[in-house]
Image (cartoon, rainbow, N blue to C red; front, top):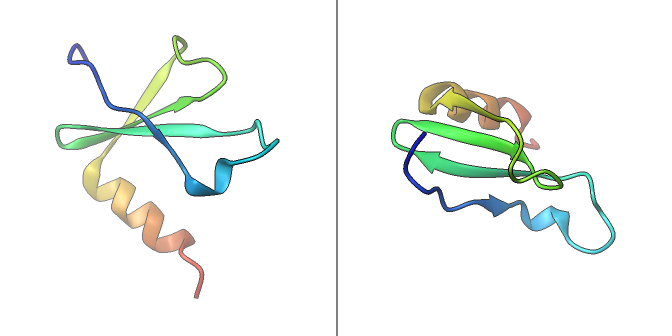
Length: 60
């Protein structure tokens, strides 16, 4: 991932909550990183897999 990514946190990560991840769209993938370590490792998921993950955890 050589292109600069635009990272964002969940709207649920406000206040004193320090255990957060950030995500960024990276072409046909979604990159995920630890918000406390922005220069640390990044893991990327294919967009379809990320969408399936979100659908699986969505509250019913």
